Amino acid sequence: MEEDNITETLRTENLEIDLLITAIKGKIGYDLTGYARASIKRRIQQLVIDENVNCISDLIPKLLYSRQCQSNFINRLTINVSELFRHPISLLRLRESVLPYLESFPRRDIWIAGCATGEEAYSMAILLEEAGLLNNTQIHATDINTEVLKQAKTGILTKGLNKEDAARYQASGGTSSLSKYFSTAYNKQKLSQNLLDHISFSHHNIIQDQVFCSAQLVMCRNVMIYFDLKTQNRALTLFNNSLVQNGYLVIGEKESLVNSPLSSLLTTIDEPAKIYQRKSSEHV
Ligand SMILES: C[S@@+](CC[C@H](N)C(=O)[O-])C[C@H]1O[C@@H](n2cnc3c(N)ncnc32)[C@H](O)[C@@H]1O
Image 1 (cartoon, rainbow, N blue to C red):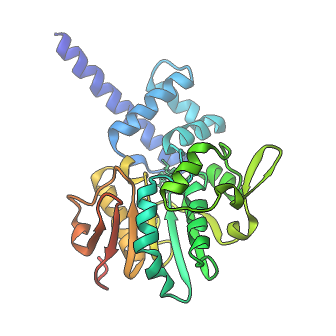
Image 2: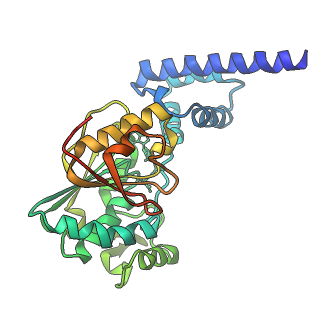
Image 3: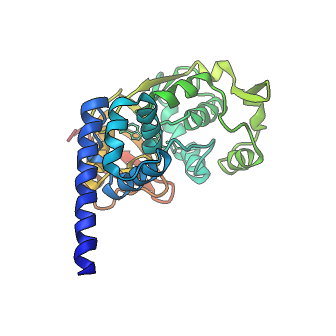
C-alpha cells in the first residue's frame, strides 16, 4: 500500500515536471528536454524551496508571470560555476600538444562553448599570450545564459584573484605571475584589455543552435555533464562539425566520449586531459 503511494507521488511529480518543461519552453523558449532528468529534477526541487511554494505545479504560474522567477530558474538551471585554469593538467597538456598545432595557422579561431562567467576564455587568452599566439587569434566564447555573458564581457573576475587561482595557473605550466594579466580597481581584478580584445562573448544554445564557427580548437567543459546521452551526442556532433580537419576538442574532466558514436571520428590524444583530435574531413 505504502509502495503504491510512493509510486503515485513520483508519477504525479513527473507529470508536474513535464508541465513545467512545457511552460518554460512556451514562455522563454528554453527546451529542457535535452538535460538529464535527474539534474533538472534537483534544480526544480531547489526552486520550490527558494520560491517558497508547496509543490512543483505552484511554480508554473510564477514562472509564467514573474521575470524574477524566470531569471532565478535559469540561473539555477545553468550552473554558472567556473574558475581560472580549471583542470590544470588538461591545460598543461594543451600547451604541449595543441598550441604547436595552432602555431601552424596564420589565423586561428577557438570556440569555448558554455563559457559561464568567462574564466575559461580568460585562461585561454593567457595561455595564447604566453605562447606568442594571441595576435591573430579570436576566441569565441558562448553561453546560453545572457546574464553571465554580460558579466564575462566586463573582464572582471567574479570572485577576485586568489592563491588557488595562482596555484592552478602554475600547475598548468604558467611561469609568470598570474596577477600581471589583471589590473585592480576598487578591489576588483579585471583582465588586461589587450587580452580581452581577443575574446568575443555571444549567446549560443548548444542544444538548439547550429555550429557557431569554424575552429581549430573547441573547448566545452563541464556542460555536457548536465545533458542526457542523446543531447551529449548532438553536442559532440556539433563540435566535430565545427572543427577544421585535425582540429582539437577538449571536454570536461568528468565527461567522456566512451559510448559515443563520435568516438570513431576523433583520435584520443590524452584521455586524462580529455583532449581529442578530429580524424577525417567527413562530417556526420
Ligand atoms: C558549470 S558551467 C561550466 C563553465 C566552464 N566551461 C568551466 O568549465 O569552468 C556550465 C555552463 O554551461 C552553460 N550551459 C548550460 N546549458 C547550455 C546550453 N544548452 N548551451 C550553451 N551553454 C549552456 C551554463 O549557462 C553554464 O554557464
